[in-house]
Length: 159
Image (cartoon, rainbow, N blue to C red):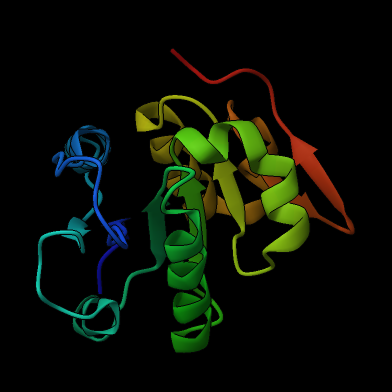
């Protein structure tokens, strides 16, 4: 079992360019330095189905990156994660998430948390908050999440 699986969704159709998921690598380095176990699944280049990562690693948290172009693949990853284990927390970040967090949380029930802006510090703080109790999420800067029947938006992302 690992703390977090970071996922770069597979690009459908003609990809703009095959760019390594550097944002996920930065996040992975930050959370690993803090003592959390992490794995990156780059579905755009790896010839494995996403479900194999869930079975192999049984992550507590799945962090999904996404652009506007890959948003539906990102949401599908969240759905597959929820089907695999309803207790796994799904976090959605990236360019698209930063601007559509409220809409995403309102319409994609399988996404639990949205990270706005750069994700290194926010993701680390999410992992720490979840470890000590989900009620601590309100203290994490730069995120949105559901609480009670409403969507909570915390302050600007940490720099």
